Image (cartoon, rainbow, N blue to C red; front, side, top):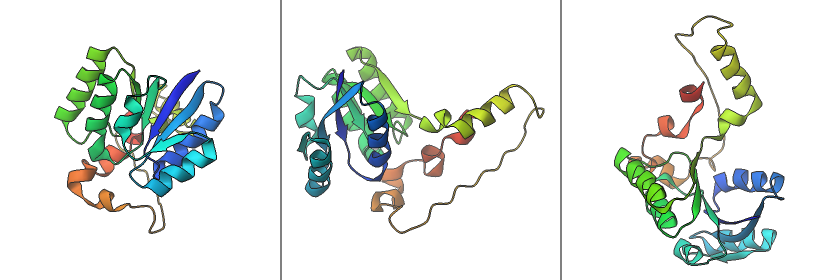
Amino acid sequence: MIHLALIGCGSISRDHLMALRVLGDRFRLIWVVDVDEEAARRVADEWGCRWTTDYRRVLEDPRVDAVDIATPHHLHAEMAVASAEAGKHIFLEKPMATTLEDADRIIAAADRAGVVLMVGYVFRYRPAFRRLHDMVADGRYGRPFLAHGLMEVYGPHFLAPWMKRKDQLGGGALFSAEGTCWI
């Protein structure tokens, strides 16, 4: 059983929590972290675990085996490096970082600490994406030279304020979308 701390209780964390429900026999959520005390408390109450507003607190807990970092992009590097240095395995929501230098720092920290680092490019596991990948890989339709895709998301809740700031988002849609890079 892997004891896990979820860092970030925003919108993407709902997907992470759904995955934990499916993998419940392998993981036990023992901490949730969010700067919004109400959000952290709500998830902690639902999951019967502890909560805090400071991610460093969970890194000090020897019971935590791994962290799931589901925070705004510009926070990934600091949190991932600190997690690696604390000896915690890391599942890091995409993108890894907002700069190449920060991505290199994260990789180096994980290598030095000997911890597992996985970036959450999870669309590749969705059945539709796997099928499309297989169709391209086996040459069924020849060699593709152009692809076009469209994903529409509606509602004012979708774009958090940090997503509208280039310094916090990083590469924008190219960092946040993954399908075309993998297929």
